[in-house]
Length: 258
Image 1 (spheres, rainbow, N blue to C red):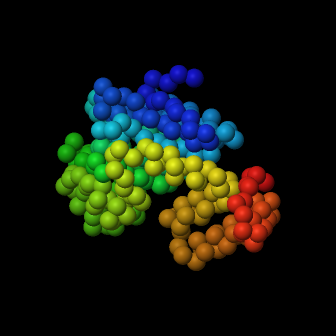
Image 2: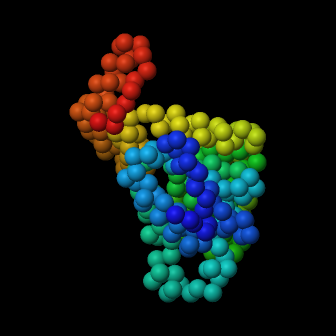
Image 3: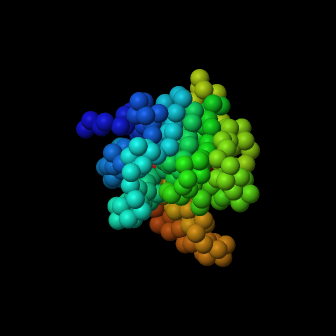
């Protein structure tokens, strides 16, 4: 299927989704989000897709939400349209891992979209920001909620209230991104990481993702119980038997997702 605002690239069991609105600096509009969600919904039950990479161009991951699309809307229209909420839920509830690969600018909605992913990897040129305050508004798809959980209250408050940008080195130092690579190796490295994840047991992948996400929404004691139940449940899988047997026998496991 052809898409207007995204490009799909298959790398074995890794699906790379490239945001593609160069004329608008990859600004996120309703069509882009609908196309992205369509791909995720199709990939959800596709056994040939085990990991998703979400990336943009060398200079722009996404420059923000499309201001021209939103400029004339009033609060009632935004509320009744539930603007971006459905798409946000599709992305944030997707069960397989999504890696955000950020090169260049990830601003406003672009930064928020990257933070919806499970792993955030940056090139040395990456810059992150939540500059909505400069438009007389604020973040609306998770920026005030996810950023503090990654970088802490005071760093998040600084970024949201001043609108300043954070470079890749600062982002790695404060925990917003997990790794930073030179621009020339950037996509190669992301694909390598995605392929390494795709080799693991899908039951373990999903259980880990659900457990870590649960930790953001619960207290420690509830999270420990949730984790323990997931851990115990994996002992009913063939992959647990294979993984532990392979370890004892000093060989590489062959997982079957059973």
